[in-house]
Amino acid sequence: MKRSVIFMLAIALAAGATSLGAQTLNSGLRGPTPLNDEGPAPPMAPMRNTSEKEVRNYPEQPPVIPHSIEGYQVDLQGNKCLSCHARARAAESRAPMVSITHFMDRDGQFLASVSPRRFFCTECHVPQNVANPPISNDFIDIDTLLSRASPGGRR
Amino acid sequence: MSAVDPAKSGGGFFAKVWRFVLELVDVLIRPSSVFGLGVLVLAGFIAGVIFWGGFNTALEVTNTEKFCTGCHEMRDNVFAELKSTIHFSNRSGVRASCPDCHVPHNWTDKIARKMQASKEVWGHLFGSLDTREKFVDRRLELALHEWGRLKANDSLECRNCHSAESMDITKQSPRAAVAHQRYLFTGERTCIDCHKGIAHHLPDMRGIPGWQ
Image (tube, rainbow over all chains, first blue to last red; front, side):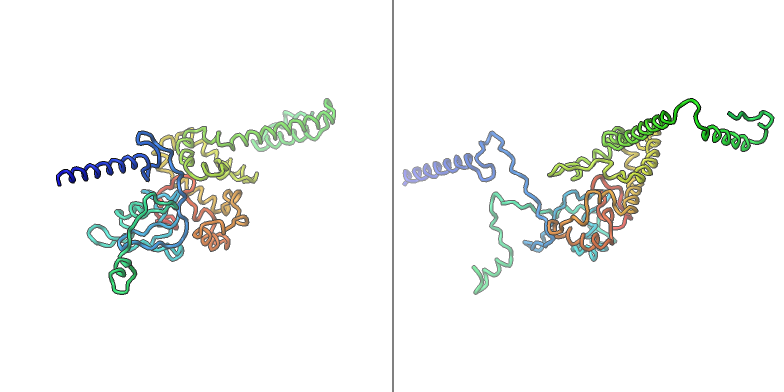
């Protein structure tokens, strides 16, 4: 009994060691570059540049930006995003208006325009790159999860 | 030579000027008794070529980026800001220099702009913008000048390179294609109405149409 436990432990250790070794040799993110070297930087992926909305993965998700925002100035002087997404500009630009929650201060009071704490768009909203993720994601959204649980639902 | 009679040289200042003008005309219309006609014509022609060539050469020297960035006001503020934009560094390496956007190419308009620019020389000599703080404080005023100029000439300097006729909107992003069809091709807007702050940082944009 005792001997077999030690034997199994040894096998487990060996397996772990080999998998660790394999990881150092070819880790998904680093590629074949040794740990003490810095590999070549991957080429920069282009920004997704469309006008199509992307579906949110969960209701609270800040919508991602489907277009390029290169050169957009968002600072004390001005906010390029609001040139289209502001309340008064949305009709002309046909861009979605920033949601009313952006007008709230931290006490829940609505201000006349975008609240300073919600002014810097890219703190939450990000543009998308056209790139293959190095590690795949098995996230499923809540609708898929619920339909799996229901009788006759997709499994 | 018709010397003015000293007896008649009295009178006011205007009378004196008038007499001088009459005398000058008298000299100018009389044929030369020393130089031949050919010599005079040739000398006039050569002098004209030298003057005109020199004038245009000097004008072109002031129309280079090297000249513009010779002053630290331009080099440390607007030129430094330009360097990170697409009009300085981009995939094909075609770039705009200062006069491409800020000086009209048409000769008469160019001279008019150069005369305006003499005020900028004054500003340099008297240090109106000699620190970053002074420059930032006056950025709105300076930007308003340029926006007004480009609005008045229908963004001529933009259109020297970016022609609406040659725009292939199928190669543009959907957003750009829609906006250009609705506003640019109909003539409702001109380039500068939407494309502000593309080559330099923006001033305080509160109250500018289309900005928050």
